[in-house]
Image (cartoon, rainbow, N blue to C red; front, side, top):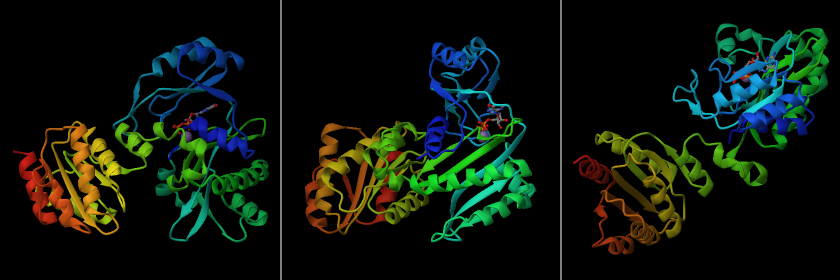
Length: 383
Ligand code: GDP
Ligand code: MN
């Protein structure tokens, strides 16, 4: 789950990371009031979960509160488009932050290096710009420090790494402290990414996180109730957001054949089969093991929220999941939501006979294999 910049900065501040003062606003008046607290010298930043906001026109510096308010008015409701996110995102809130003078911009992040099976700190004196570009053109400008899971980071290795990254001498001590705090925050918040770009060095000699990106591992959200409460606005797609609230693994794919399966592998096979049959899958949805009727019902509802869906394919292989529970869920789902579109179900495994018998005489078309089910739903949906 990605946190907004202002949320990320709040989290990091709790770990002692220096961040500029500021608050969020969703209207011009609030923005003016916050800007006035800083004497009008502020930066107004769109709070959208995408990179490259600066280039997209979502970050601007101001010298007076009125101008900051006017810009806030312009930004709210506007769709920002960047190279990283061509579809764009609508701005609902801005961060009005104390404007800091920046002499130099560095890059620092903490993430998991899966290949090394260790957390890793990435550090560069070339901050402020797109780090992928730095990685492509000047790979040596990025220094990696792997974090030993047993011993953590030692001061001497951090001092050495900071020098190797060519962080200027006066900033080195603060950078070492910054990295230690970020590494601690990374573990304690169950983050999968913490990225500070730019990490600003001010003319007064202070290192401060001018931007912050924190992403929390979804599987650890149960340990972080405060983040979980804001989960709804973290997903970029409203149906994905609703799925997250319901705790359902759903990814929107843009096609028009809705798919429900149990187990990620089976769902992926279903996507392949629909594709091979000439259809376009609308989503990935894993109803999970041991699915109960109510959950199946919720999954059907979720898929039908997508107005593009023309047909629904159900592919269940009962193991722990009982096919009769799935059938019950499907029947109640179609009692409450009547989508008036074709539905094909392939149900095998535990209690399959009972399940199929329950669907007899309903509008749900049975299929005896996954391939047949895919062909049938494509034929019916595009008829
Ligand atoms: P991003 O484009 O989405 O990564 O947004 P950033 O928060 O990184 O802002 C983009 C750029 O705006 C930064 O690289 C800085 O150069 C500049 N910027 C942001 N905040 C400040 C600030 O407080 N003072 C100054 N001088 N520049 C800032
Ligand atoms: Mn940035």
